[in-house]
Length: 343
Image (cartoon, rainbow, N blue to C red):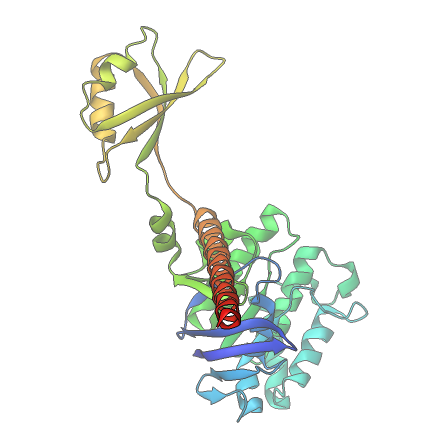
């Protein structure tokens, strides 16, 4: 549905996006993550046709953005981060106006406008001026503008930014419901939302794609420790004695002594060993009450930060290597000149 092939975008000597390549299949919801200035917005603007790539090719539903821009853009609904809606129009007037811009046929327009208004939960406020809407409703109006004309591809830039938790959940549920009819590329700084909504995630930094994978696979790649946290009531202080009998435990550390007399521990188990059942059985036999037992797992945020940090370190090492090579070349040149002078 979306195909990006060896795309580069340069502004003078600055490379904003550097030879990126990826495919997004029909019906997928894909998250697009990156720090400010990583090349995320530039990439999305190229996909929508707002700016042209310096090199490479972008295809939307089989249409080349350079060769058939009108047909390619017709497949796209774009919701920018800034929520650009006209405050002096009512919700219905704005959606109607967007239908005209997208070339919805007159016979279909009335039905299409009502469909989108209902789909985005705006029916009760459709005659309200946009200026009087809450931030959450304004996000919905912007979403309606993207959905009008039933495009196959939706590009959503920070759709939940600035919303309260209830509004975030509403927008999240709305985005999930779009999967059956649309392919979605979603940019967000809220990584927990991306993890819940998206089937795959792309991470970009300094104009390069660092990873494309499912949230779970990315989390698993950085989860290299098998750690349990357990909160217990242990009046007779038997835990150290009991833990010694469980052979797959490498180490136990006291994390916190709570005000109610309970204690929280971190238990480090051997790799790939699930010892929760063994802990529960042994603790129960020795009258140690478990109030909470859970496995510590890596999050998408952990994966994101590790990939970004590792890439920065690799880049720095490469730069250091280049400096060493330059110094070696310089030294060799100086030695050659010196030898030539002697001769």
